[in-house]
Length: 272
Image 1: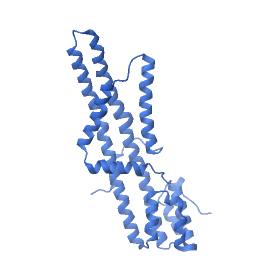
Image 2: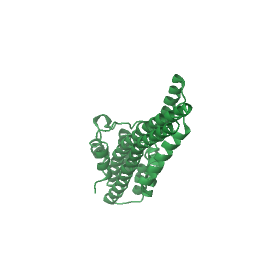
Image 3: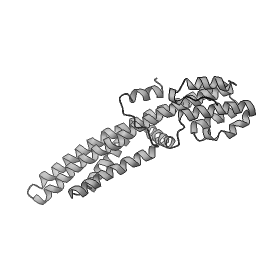
Image 4: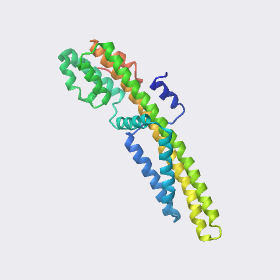
């Protein structure tokens, strides 16, 4: 079975990189932007762009389809991954620098230096690595444990992005269903011209809502999750390698050389 990192890389082939700001702000910005577009269009055209029935059909239908198409494990792991991705992410350069500092401190102060590694503790995986180091695991056992936990995170990211992509695919389909509902309402009220406008509004607005929800919110959110997961997996690899070498009593110079080989040239760190 392919690892979570390999599946994640394959799913992101050709996808735009939208992994910038923290995840909750991305979702908030997407929803706010969508609402802003609707309000701006309403003000500019003098037309009511907000229709409750269309919103219920698209939002409720998308949620229902996603619920039916997903397992409880997928929904649970997606929620857990969203919470993890909401925590601050250490950059690769920062991680390398802090690990080298910890290696140097461990040689001078011993295990007591682990308590002072506050920057690494801010990251959930970094905190886990420090806990295992404090437990006195052998280098190979420590690395294997962290590798398994990183793989679990990668698999969760694949599940989460897949669930959001299914929701993103379902939203436009629900919009088209709403279009048919609106057209049927128009046909039923052909003898009443006053009802034609309402039916046409439902037909067009549900199409708009479905396309916007899918392509402005859900699919970009899936891309962002994949991008953030790739960056976190890179940091996890650094933490895993650094923790192993520190426990194996490697020198700070050797650790610096190994970690710098794992990052991009502009992220490499030189000891003072």
